[in-house]
Length: 169
Image 1 (cartoon, one colour):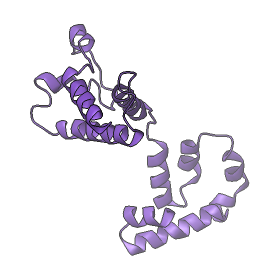
Image 2: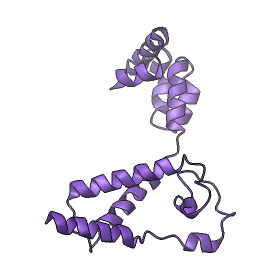
Image 3: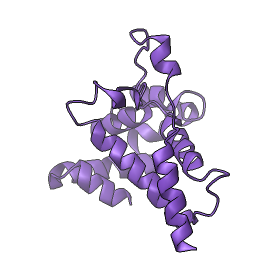
């Protein structure tokens, strides 16, 4: 798995060889990575800070580590997926097979992603489909009524699903 990732991140064979050498130094506790202070700090300070302080002898690996450790972790994507799944697989629609529910969540998510690329995304009814996205932008420019008016209530979709379920059974 690591080799595949490195091949994608470093398509240049020479750079990839350099990263592999840096990885060998890191995993083997060689050179600066074997220093007592470096080993002691691995468990005492934040990993990102550790790479900033002790990763200078492996500049390519240090760059990757700082980028990875600097990413914000958020469960908003998972929670959005679970919310969509619970909307589709509700008490009213508990006859849907798990595979069908997964397929509907997949289609819903892809439609949502595709809609973000259209010029009308920030206009019209679907403007509030994605209130804040995955970013941490402010909601100050949106009125309380726009936020309060959000709903997943789609009677046409419910009727269509009930009809299809009745046909299948």
